[in-house]
Image (tube, one colour):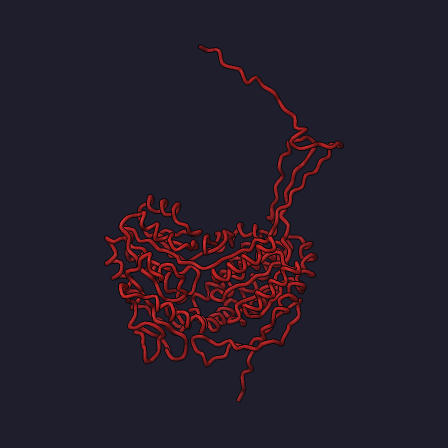
Amino acid sequence: MSVTQTRTVASIIGGQTREGGTQVESRNPANLDELVCEAWLTDAEGFVDACRAAREAQRAWAATPAPVRGKTIGRIGRLVEDNKEALSRLLTREIGKPYPESIGEVQEVIDTCDFFVSEGRRLYGQTVPSELPDKQLLTFRNPVGVAAIITAGNFPVAVPSWYLVPALLCGNAVVWKPAEYAPALGHALCELFLAGGLPDGVLNLVQCDGPSAFEGLERALSERVVDKVGFTGSSEVGSRIGELCGRHVQSPCLELGGKNPLVVMPDADLDLAAEGSLFSGFGTAGQRCTSLGTVIVHESVHDEFMRRFTALVEQAAIGDPFADVLYGPMIHERFGERFLDWLELIRDHHSVSGSSATGRITSDNPRANFVGDPDAGLFCHPTIVDGVTRDDEIYSTETFGPIVGVASFADFDEAIELANGHGYGLSSAIYTNDPRSAFRFRSAVSAGMVSVNNSTSGAEAHLPFGGNGKSGNGSRQSGIWVLDQFTRWQSLNWDYAGKLQKAQMDVAELTGDASFRLAWD
């Protein structure tokens, strides 16, 4: 009888695997008896060592011509494509994402690589006309240097690729800390990137917990071996990272939480709005930064919308993520425990629907239309909370899990107040067939991303992604816009006149007759 050996993963620093430290287990949240891998978590010193290794490797990588770096990104994309099914299966096993969504997430890595292949030939500067003769003005994009990237585990391969691919393409070296509860996926993605031909030290993987990463980042910034920080995670931690970077006169790329509104106007297609709300609120068990927070429904269609929305949620299959389900388990025990906390925000004036019970799904607390063994994993009931107002804590709190609030409005201005009043500004949606409502909403909502007749989730790899307010500091990922995060503009003025020419002082001036008037009366 053969015994399957447990895979052990660790940090990869300067091309070398670094074991030792604290060993943790990663288990399948849909089947907690299944051990996905064991991982060695390093400490703050390991994080700093990775930054030092990146600093040593960065100059040679930046000297590699950008089109050659682009070809490397292209090879990485093809490797991810060739390993798409294996990486998707691992994604479903380690964080419990339904397999079709896992396939879509891996495809986003491929799409990101495909987009940036040609950016290696398009890192354009500009030729700018000078106000002086015999002088040329030019601009160039230079790499920032060493980028420290810290990402969450709800999108453990797609979101990291939004940072890693453009950062590497632009000539930076990278230190990447994935979520400590998804170490196998961090290792697998790093393996694919390194197999694409990156030199040692250009991409370093640091498996560690959050406090060690923060301490290591603080030390690395003081040692000046980090030039750019990218972080995807909670608004609370993002605020601390922003404060830390500010002390070192750095501007991080922060992609944080959301309380994303979906407005249903009186003229909306209610079936479409209900379907969009279902996917927005309960896809990935509500564990997206772009998940729907509050449906804001016009009072004239509120009851009918609720009837349709509730019916869809009640009928949805939940459970085994390799089966045909709306969502699977919570990503990790920590999120399952936090979800139970969010349920404490429900008040007496709220009405609750969406499932046969609330809280964790078990054989003693069952859910209709459950697929698989409810006691095997970390499954939670979908919960709709109707009657939400601006005074409710649940209105202004990001609830990371399968819980959606519903509020009513009487006029458009009230809808906008509800859409913006929580202080987040990541994603949003409006359902309407009136172009005036769509454009009014776009101009008034605080969110960095707006959908019309679509879900609050569903970013494409070539569209800017990011938020405002408590959702981020205005930085953007994806597409050409992320290049500004990983390059610094440098200007060059080249004077070949053979004499010193002083800008603003030695400028030729052509005079005219300002008193001239036409004499055609």
